[in-house]
Image (cartoon, rainbow, N blue to C red; front, side, top):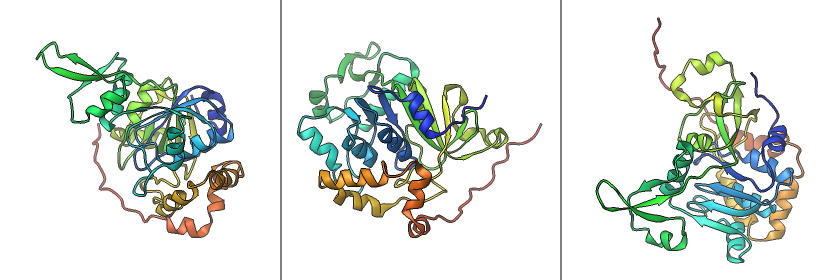
Length: 300
């Protein structure tokens, strides 16, 4: 059964005020278009979870979408602070939980596995235990030594951006693999955004690349250029210039609001956003093909 719908329809149907939302992706495949649509539809009181919040959560917090943020490492990658989130946190206007990267992924794995907690080896990051009461210590019943445990993270909705998916939700990802699979299996509802919608035959031709299977997916949305200013491996490059530009924009609330008004509220969808970026940006982010060697799965 086809699960194809527009991104606007998927957000309207599956993202509700007060939800715990996880926009997945690590370095690339960050679903900025979904975050923009959530802003455009005026969602409020969200708990935003992400291993690396990136610019998208800065923008969503600036738009008033967020009540709380759950994160590991917060920053404008390679540039500096996420200034909107920092201002809100320092002013006490945003609740927060901080974890190590491994702590966040362990929480997702516990959620995906239906477990009440998962253990980790103690590390030197004892300040996190002091700052976050959800870090606990228990005794390993086999060795008698102490281990750290964290509770499951089970988002109400996860948005996963992929290179290609079929209409049923089977999705291929390649390049840097982040926490997409764990977030999808941990979430109650899953929205797939894809650069391409392909046939089931294409998906079946390379089954090892199918990180997200159809049986956990609720909606599939064809959203080319969804990840900009992040990148999608094999489709377009990271817009490093924008990450530098956002550092300047986020200095003041007035500049941030002007950006939101022009680039999110001022465009109806991702197609219009991409066209507004213009031919120079399109050319700058273009990537040449670099194909992997074919894999022979054999015949029977």
